[in-house]
Image (cartoon, rainbow, N blue to C red; front, side, top):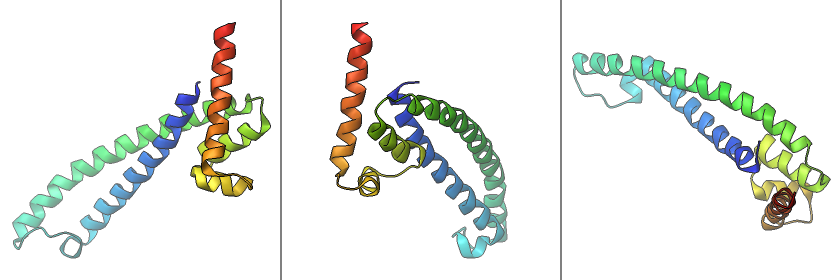
Length: 137
């Protein structure tokens, strides 16, 4: 695993939240269509829209499950990669940011006496140093 892959895990989490919200939105609309969506005035228009939503919901749930399974696998790999980070300060930052899903500002606040830029740069400097050491080998 690389730092770039660990960073991708954060974005997968955002994608999963968005998909879960969309699933809930569709399910809610299907239960109470006249209040949730403007589908037109006729019964046939509502029925047709429901017919469109069923496969859309099934596909979204399938993709959600696949993305969730992939995220679980990548999460385990990220935990292992972060545990191997030799600098305890950077390791703590990485855990807060990528395993706990905090923003850079939240990480800085949680650690204390740091700014979002300072914790982000600490990680970048560490990654650059590790890349340089690997290249020198």
